[in-house]
Image 1 (cartoon, rainbow, N blue to C red):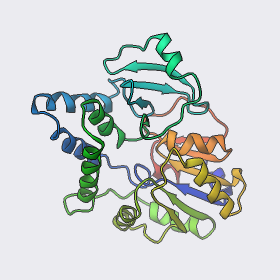
Image 2: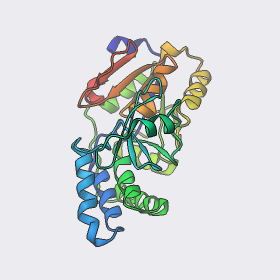
Image 3: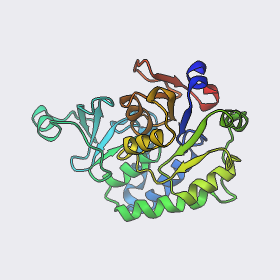
Length: 275
């Protein structure tokens, strides 16, 4: 992997879960949402979320949530074909419904098919199942972002990361591509002391819907071939699968490992280990 990074000319980083790995803010987000459901089901609400985090629920990071069917879908990330579907209670969807609803390539749209690529989406999906509105989730998400830049919250800096990125910046183009909006990105980078590290920032990227489009724009702008670029992130659906499909290299940050072999893919437990 070190050789691959050293030979590259362009490194494209995710932000949340990549440049920092704290997860307390996901729990905070869920607690805010929990307070908006009827008190009689608040315990059930948070219990479902905890089950998801522990891998004991059909909904999990790496799955896709179908809002219409209230189902958790297993999707091949490179072919985008649905291979299995389970209802909220764990029951497997019947074959007839599976074939009718998911006959072709799945398209993520943030409306019906929600790609659960990282910890932000677990509280969101829980909220959708228990009947909260999109406005509820947006309000609580914004409140969580405010909390993340308050004195009550602090980010854990990855030891040596700043120095490694500053060294790489002298030889390569460093780009940040994130779904967070510009204001949040700049605040988080200041907190991490990484505000001057990147040559360019692409906020509000709408990954995974627009990942390929933006990756194409970035590689074209910096005039690099696919094998000279590396996509680095903790979200396989958002950052890794689209990069591999475009023949870019990819570094997937996943502490629990991942069962996929690919010539252009490296899996590491932390970003610090990647450098």
